[in-house]
Image 1 (cartoon, rainbow, N blue to C red):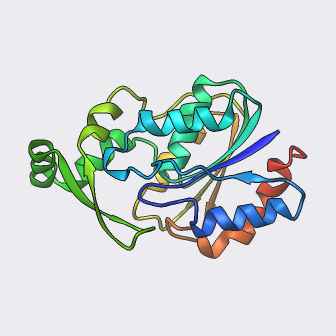
Image 2: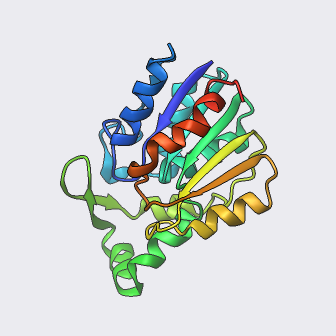
Length: 209
């Protein structure tokens, strides 16, 4: 059984959460693979290009997916189409990303992005703004806001998340009995509750719960 961690938007395999789960799983003899979803080309990033990275990484083998923010949304999209995903841990999954992201920029900024084709976005891994192509919006229109996967899943979401509303995870869990939702006293990063998340997700990730 392979385990993959899918990092968030404008992040990288070196994120704090990725390293946390890598260490915890390593302690149990489980390697965690953390692909670079942008493959070094953030400017031309799309949902389709990231799903292709995930597909190559899984190689059609049974796998467990851990996804953070946009990585959580991508994990849900991928699992909905690929039964070799056996279970998922989604951390503040960015449901509705294709419709929410441009809308949250405001009409003027979104229109300027559409017109020019490029938007400066702060990239946390690089510590500075990097251009992002409007192609991520055009490509994203083909994907469901709430991917309908059926595999067992745990969703962990901060009650004080100002980036991805926790109501989205609540809405998803209500209509999906395969999902266990944990709402936590945290923000979007969830870094202050990682040990708490591990307590209820560790056995699940190992296939023991």
